[in-house]
Length: 261
Image (tube, rainbow, N blue to C red):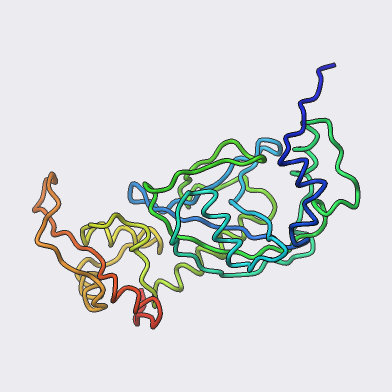
């Protein structure tokens, strides 16, 4: 019989001492959106022990604000600071928690989790969505997962627990907030064209938008600066580049935009 691998120190600490530092029964789960190849994508982690995909998430320290916990999880996973982060829902179905992922993970090391251990009790999770620059993130694994992928929002499947519902609620919230909050700054490069911005909105809304109406509406928000530069290399007339006006963008985040898509 093959000898079991030694339990890594982080997992041992989580099992034995986790309840001394972490708030029992509460976690955060983050739906991290990125935009690449004209498609809206989300970051998912592959949990090899249960052969399912998972949202990046984590526990909350006893003395930690829950928003700070979400920022910490995002920073650990992506290496990014100053991330656009929005709390959107609390998920508290009494049947949502599934201890299988923990049991199978520890079984890899020949360890059985005690019946009343804090790790396998009911957890309520607070959902956050984040918007990040796909190209700027440096994704890191942890003790539970070793693989990750950016997956097209339309092709997400085989998720653990209620993570499909969490993603559905996050996308619903993002689409609703698109009507009154600026979005693109966190998902596009610093300089972009109007067609690129339109493709982002179309990817989020999952529908085509009229080019002229879109341009008129975006310019009417007065959050864009038109540059005296064009995007080279296309077959058609080179479109002008734009950038977001940081001051007006931040004001719009606080006070909102007006309109609907």
